Structure formats: C-alpha cells, structure tokens
Length: 94
Image (cartoon, rainbow, N blue to C red; front, top):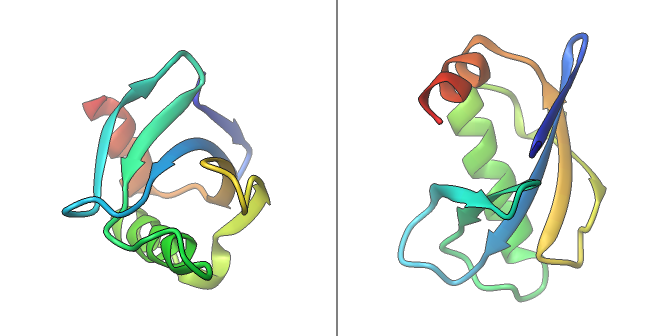
C-alpha cells in the first residue's frame, strides 16, 4: 500500500518524476508508491520544494506540516502530513 494512516497523520510513499510538463498525480507505481509528476527539475532541491507546494495545495495543509521521512535525495520518497478531509476525498478517487 502506498499510504499509511496513523491517527491524525498520513505517510505517503511517492515516486517523484521531476521536469514534467505539469504537476499531477499519476498511477500507482508498483504496489507501494504513487507516481507524482513535478514541473521543477531535480536541481538544488527545486523538485522537492515544488512537491511540497503541490501536496500542500492538494490536501489543504500548510507547507510546514509536510515532512520528508525518507528519500529527500531519491526518486522514492516518504512524506508525512496531517490527515485532512481533502486527503480522504482524494483516496476515494483512486
């Protein structure tokens, strides 16, 4: 499973694809990650910053609430953020 819910927090396993034409959620990558395309290139942390901005906007959380648990320098990342109604609604669309 590409996500875990712990009480009020969510951990999301992401396969990041930098330098895409737009920010968007894509398909499930393998069995344990969600692929997300990010506009910014993977240079000097630009893609990570854009990923945080995209997730914050998508799930209505502040950028400061999104924490990299692992993979900050990797294409496979685990991020944690507060559980929101927007996240729950997004899960139903997958």
